[in-house]
Image (cartoon, rainbow, N blue to C red; front, side, top):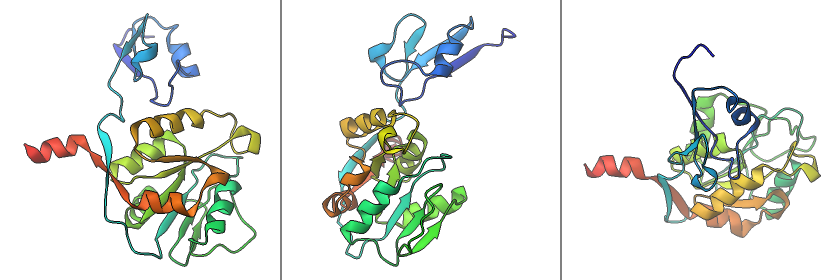
Length: 215
């Protein structure tokens, strides 16, 4: 508003058009608007490289069972995510080494392993790095952080119809994950033991780091 040169890069999870923030900034002259999805670029919106483009997955030697599982459900206020917890318990794979970061999904039953409501960023990174499998909600911030740690995550989708989110925008993030094979996207109730084991057999490579190592 003061004429300072400014750029706005829309979130990678906006596959089909700008967010409310993007629409507001369209009313401010002089702001360079960029989208990470060239399909809907046009007008003032210019294409910009996706933050996800540098990541790819590859097979790794599957770890021995019992698997160390880290479940992180984000910190969104007012929305529980019981379906993915119930599905994981039904697989029989949760054990004393399982770590749960539940956010708003406080449980009355006793979950196996270590249970936290919230954790500091360094604790999150440590538990994620030490796990054989990470199960998370389909939030784009958590996704990017896990990819940067080399983790091929299971992304459980929150649904408004189950009271897990305000809308179904996490379906768009799931679409990105499937298309790029940088994780496994699944509806919370549909998590199975086979999906957990599949995730344990893959890892993420950051192409930017690989290029630097070759140089």
